Length: 309
Image (cartoon, helix red, strand yellow):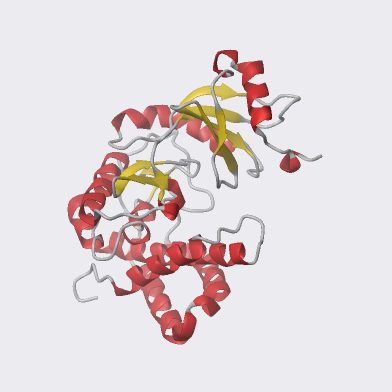
């Protein structure tokens, strides 16, 4: 059996805890639905176990272990903070981490009803996160570049999901291309490299009482262009609240908004592709992400943040 084929069960989680952190082994273990690179298990009421599953290397978990304890104390929303480390063993040859549990429902299974509050909350969180990162901060790998350097990915996603744009395929494709072309033409980020979450999509935020209640999965954390996070104004927030978000954030110039809007379009296409894969029963597919991605893409195309757009 290969590492990727190891079946992660509640009994395995309990056995690992008994071996490496026996004082936690008596807590109830419950599986959390979802997850791909890592699988999550609730541990009691306040903790969770993050098990490396499909991620080929431990880099993402090790990054969270190193940096979340540094960032968490100054962030205004709860984030998962590592409290114990699980090391590879004969029983399970991959990394696992015990982290604080962030209560709430993931946005891909819930909704935001308090849009203005959520826009202000997200803006406040990103203002706190987007500060200059230290020289030893992780550099971006498969994300973080200017949109002009991501065109191959954009084109691949667009080609894959074009048939999902219902009866308006031609008009929608032209509109999405126009948004992307504008992002490609926008000036590059010239400020200092700031902390960027890097993967803000509906499965990586949790909601409670109709608004944002926490941010999770910092495996793609890097130092770079904040536009990668600002795309969340359309990907996460309800109709008509992007302008409120940018007013409250108050640090994004026109170029950053243009880059962010294009990146949002690409993220929406990715969500739609994952939804298609889920409908087809393909590994890693998420059937509920298709409608989420399409709704977000509609917001990208109709929400005019820039004057004269």
